Image (tube, rainbow, N blue to C red; front, side, top):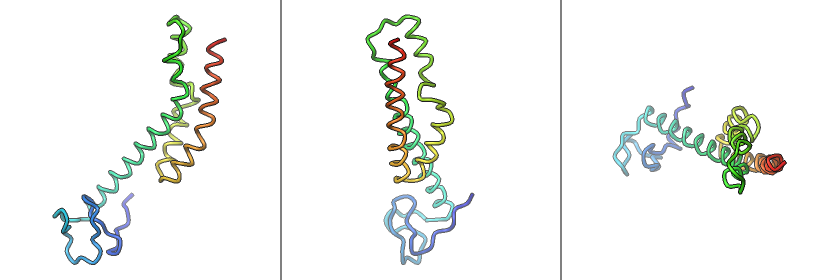
Length: 137
């Protein structure tokens, strides 16, 4: 889906971010790049990918960090421990769907990222504690 072209009032250079408001030329006076619509679209796509990657990393850490106890627990590395290590990818609960959903929501902007952090952290900590209790049984 193509992005709407920027109006001349809110144009910025896609390379350096210099405000191009009021300029008659499409060349950025700061860095010398010709600011074409294709370049602006590429910059928007890069920014969207970066937001998605940050959202993915934050959500993945929130979902999996409470289960990191499995890596550091003082327990012999027997078959029981290895069984739990094999279960580790699914301990947060349906990670393929939840991780993808929460990443999509969190990549919508900073308020959405904060909302996902607030929403996902408590159940994730609870699941980490519950899985630790089950491991010790």
